[in-house]
Length: 193
Image (cartoon, rainbow, N blue to C red):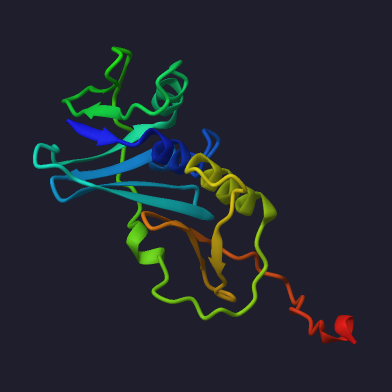
């Protein structure tokens, strides 16, 4: 049994690739679970969100990808929005359920999931960068899912490299910059003159 915070699952699922993407492993949320902790990860190759939660002594050790359609079905359950979602790993089918009895049976999406740890920058350089506003709106929505009334998040820019996004102590993201095609970040001191 693996306990999953509903709000974290909803926030992370925003970053899964849509069904048009040919990389099937990105069509859901990666779960890495053990008694030491649980991680939820989703990416579309341009933006990524990683959430963690403490494990319990009885947490199953399991790694797999919950498909987006199973997540959508579980998030649509009425009432009890503060109840955790329970993942029951199985072979070949797994189950998402909660204390009120609803259940969704699914087969994990085919993997392997990309090595997401490699794209998390240790310390972005803070140089200005251009980001697709649609990606930033996803981070805003994820922050709202996690309880921020204003959808606030921190962004440490990385120039031509990935930017690091801070949502909570247990949720962080990565966003890739848009190559500007020669457009330079301008000196705007003239605006204050």
